[in-house]
Length: 328
Image (cartoon, rainbow, N blue to C red; front, top):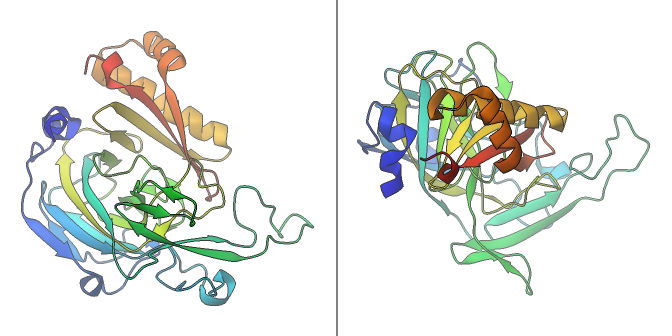
């Protein structure tokens, strides 16, 4: 954790990167899970900046798909999918501040096979929709996988690395109540694999006490979440939540030991890429001493682009820059 001492969270956060009191939000304590991000739900927990929260999350299906015989069209109650824990109120957070969330760990919980992926009619990156096309829907299929820190057992032939991350997390918008399936400036369903243990994610605060939500954990996922469903797991995820006063950002930012990243969510995909790179250029100007043209040049020659999802109501892309190029 030595790099964390040089992070934006440690340098500018109220708690300066120090861990505070520890809290546990079990599935039972959560009680009612939420399917929208918005300011109209009462907080399930109140914390102070720096506090650490261990959260028991449900998978994107709310645990409804228990076997490969459970077809999504039969067991899911749309649009009640992608359940979220929270909201967690953060003392002192006000509009214009930034919430900093450091992910300590993420472990699968529940019986094996703990991981679920699926092919769902009219959903996915390589299918048409019955709303606009004459093509028949893709046949439904469910695939269950063992998921442990030792790996994701894709098949008898293939065991993939366990590379967990949080698919959906963020803060309440100011007045809107928006489906947890949608990503945007508040975070939400970004499905961005860099939102992983060891990363700090920064969210713009839009209302008093921020109201933080989290859920939809994944055992792993390829870039783009191609079929629309990652390795969905029930999980125990531990996060440390700090507050940065007076640092106003337009959308989600992310930091690891190796790089900084700006996140854009939009359709078409090129607009998400533009939004991400635009914010990365501005971040380099504001905090790393570049003028705009130099930052634009550097992003052109050294920037990297990660496709989080290409299936959700808005696509999510992350534009990143190595810290080594920034003297950071």
